[in-house]
Image 1 (tube, rainbow, N blue to C red):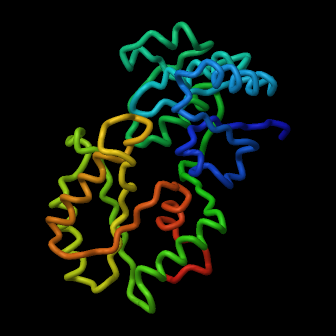
Image 2 (image 1 turned 180 degrees about the horizontal axis):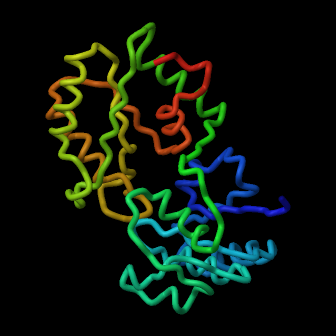
Length: 254
């Protein structure tokens, strides 16, 4: 009951955690500061004041050396994560107190909860949780009214993001267009395309052109669809989540 749980996210995805009742504090690391020693010293100093007992490394489809270093130097008594040899690295042997055997589950949530189960803790719930903040719900309500004024038809949201340099992980834009056309033929509804926002510049720099390839994907989709369609582009994950969950009672019942 006295356990305090903190989450260290980056400045982009911290919005996905806001309002989560299971977290006592959310830390945000700006990836653009990775080459600045002063930023490292400040973050590590703040983390060490907390006196953490355990740091868990949540690795996605790739390892984050930054996450591992922040956990290691946070002062936590123990640092645990999956065996990094599965990723072709020996970082875990050097930076972890405990490496857990890695298996590739179908769902990401099983992978993350597996860290706790490997430490002997039962995790019966497998449903993700997201709390839609009132201000995000209000933003989406206003945006939908702008896109579809006085419309009572059901709303179909179609997310078409995907990096074009990873074709094995995305559907071709033409397939999305065909799916949208067939759905609209079967059931009249309002279609809104959900896509990442446009890149700030047209040159590849990780900190400023995160969505460059996804914008190309959107352009190809529009050509394949052959008709204009409202597009929801927002870099705030809280706004996007509010649109996807549509949980707030003041929103239209789509």
